[in-house]
Image (tube, helix red, strand yellow):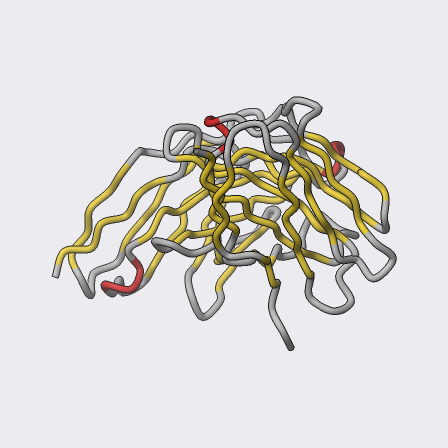
Length: 114
Length: 111
């Protein structure tokens, strides 16, 4: 069974640009959640999508958005990049139907904003 | 929101048991207690989870206090590969299964 795949693995952008990250969940999983990880702030929850609908949202500005497609693949977009957006972006997939289930994480996309 | 409190770091010797504590005094009756760990340059990895009873799997054991306000992750025989940041997390049914992450405990294994 293939794991969670995130692309690209590394990305370098400049301030003001926008970026789109992709996450392909494990087959059969309907929930995809996104996290931002920085050395200073740790793991911060961005949002979760379940069956193409945003089910949960963290405390991030509107520049951070996402979507989920009918095959459960998800994308997140960050517009008007700022230096502080440099971080490791992780996605996790799960069935999404119980609090007692495991989350499976991808290896992340390392975004550097110059 | 329910939150967890963990020590910032712990040290242990290789091949000895490790007990990683977690406090979650505001836990609700339907919150599951999850543990994940993150090795350097990798995404978090599931370790174990439980609701009320103690749990065992091939990686670790989870001991949950009777009042559920604290729990302990037990690595029975630590190896150098267990050096990681360990996160104790509550999964809240009432908040659509949203995970509430703490700062984690950095586990250092001494050879």
